[in-house]
Image 1 (cartoon, rainbow, N blue to C red):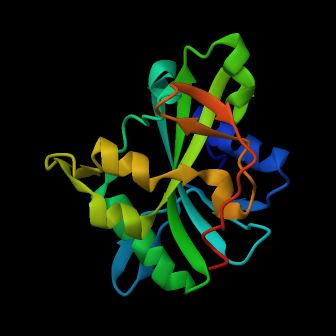
Image 2 (image 1 turned 180 degrees about the horizontal axis):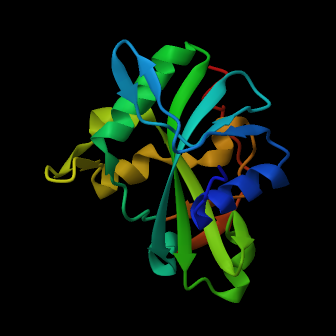
Length: 197
């Protein structure tokens, strides 16, 4: 059965291909029976150039360009089932695998002179990818909707938690967002990636 992929994940896959980062896609229909409990499927396993493997759950969200310029990342919600699933898959695969949420933001209202500061442009949409480790997200999250089983991380802790996805795979970021100056800024800074320790 052919897998239907939303435009957020399609953009993320295109970004991985552009940077020649191998990955394995996982069908949303796939489930596993582990210790008597079904685990929610994730989206991708990403194989960075550095040590370790990433179990990736992609979360697509829209983000106004004004918020992006100020490094405010907008909606951060996911489901409690997603958290339980990622934690379970980390236990299944072992210590070399790290569960992360990739928040794929479709930035709406990007000015022409800002376009190359997005991570990728696909089908006329501009995207930025930031990520959070499952464990860091889990200790900071709060209930959002008991009815729908959703959780979120409040804005300020979330802004401090997430990092450009490239840092998780050892890529040097091409820009950083500076809240005080209110616009994306290019930088040559580097940061130790999360998988090499």
